[in-house]
Length: 132
Image (tube, rainbow, N blue to C red; front, top):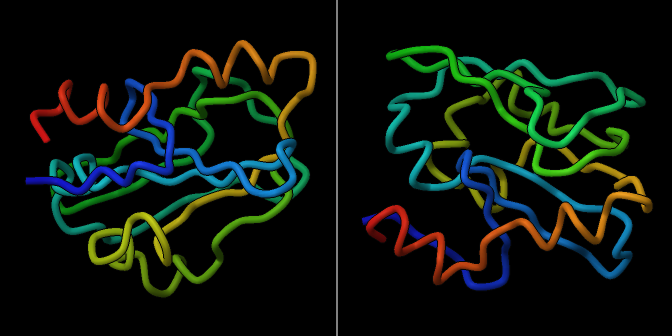
């Protein structure tokens, strides 16, 4: 059974999103459900800082022993930080997807933020959808 923290929002593409004190910056990663489905993560490709991302468009790749999967951004904005530690230790996504296995920090586009954040699921809805 996968873990679904209550303090996060979730996309239908199995990406979690955490807002911080500054509501204009969010952190994203893949969910526990997604990492279990992928299997052993062996590589991660992340966009460079300063790269623009669009909601519902792939912005990164996670490669496992089974396949390569797109990471579909849940929001539009600009990448302001990336978890470079995953380059040497991508398996952290399997062991700690919600903390050490985070992928990107994105400064969200204020014109699109409200609608994009409202489209995300809360933990209860996501858990029901994934059988968690």
